[in-house]
Length: 251
Image 1 (tube, rainbow, N blue to C red):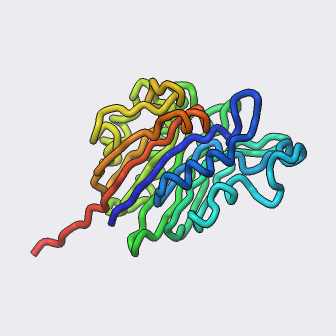
Image 2: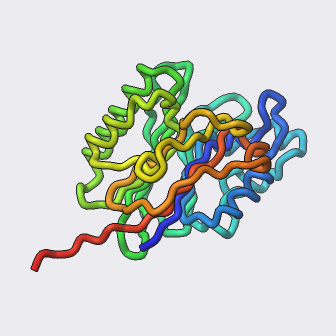
Image 3: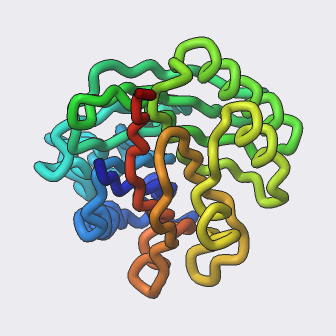
């Protein structure tokens, strides 16, 4: 079983402080990836200001606009809520999603952060998918990593395939050892190519985005860079090609 997964912080589908929409370009980029599962952060699923200014179709949410026919299955976890809208994490999938739950892992009132956990039926195998967006402060990230580990330990069977992906904001790589060793997982970029930088998009210098896997072999990992990607968000997407590792029963 082959699987192409991508994690991508889309910066709410708008450009910097100007707030100019670029969600159409993001959707074009998603379609070009040809991924099986996409983990998204900063999906602004409601923005009344853009609708009022006739800059976004009121018949769409940002999530269903991005999913289109390419991803018939999607889930959204609302994290930050404000007067004119809200944003959070999302998972787009070509495979049926059997269940999902969104957990609030905010560490303080100034940053609203979430952990979106879904289970997908991938060719008859139940795979656990977790999309995260950690905080900007080191102590917050440590506590959020602990929440992630506790979630996996408490509800994910040891034998189940697992993909954890998102924006970890962990530029010092302080969390890799804890997540990998505690969950028996592998960080995809480190396993294949060392560190793959994804931020800032115009000149990637830090590896803020990660894909951790368990129960998969990692065949290839790459960041999608270039001028067009740099214009879509302040992050570039991180893509991993995976192969499900099937256990062979003992004779």
